Image (cartoon, rainbow, N blue to C red; front, side, top):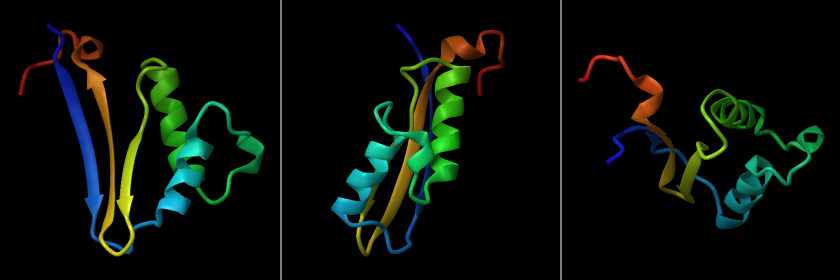
Length: 87
């Protein structure tokens, strides 16, 4: 059985509308043109690095609700940390 390491950051800011969240998720997808990003450069770079360093199955998961905040997370298979000390 594979073990996983889960990373999550949550805020209680204004969040995003479903329409804006859909736009962000599309811009993070492999179908988007990296030359036409609309203010998500940081998220795009983190997502791209996760895919390049680990593998294409690892990507950011973003959930947001307008007026309540946003959660950004990702999960890494522990196979990438073989030899690392268990916590």
